[in-house]
Length: 150
Image (cartoon, rainbow, N blue to C red):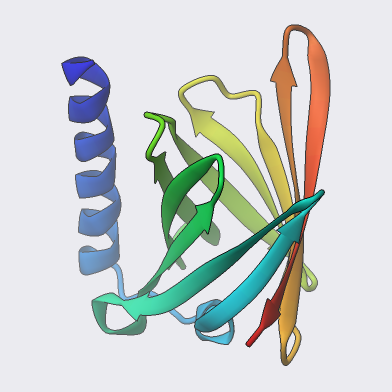
């Protein structure tokens, strides 16, 4: 249990260090800032997205019935990637790396399992959507999420 906390802390520290040393460009991050009503299947929950680190990152907090969760996302222009660090109240965690193609960001998990993916549509004026896929017991399962700004 302590080991994954250390790894998560180290990953977050590395991500923050990358943000602090590389002058990040916005690359759509400001477009996400706001409060949303989200739907994934039959689940409805609130999500708040705030600007962090002088606009170089965003913090995404959601409160679904199955878990409270948080992402910190930044854009690293030197590598042309988004880095997303995730943790939730059930002990889940992951690091994802995403690349933009048009108005879509294609994420892949880089730690710990390297099996999950997420395809996210860059926000329009009042909404964004994403499809998160994971492999469980050899079977791919996907969750479709749509969030509308309040």
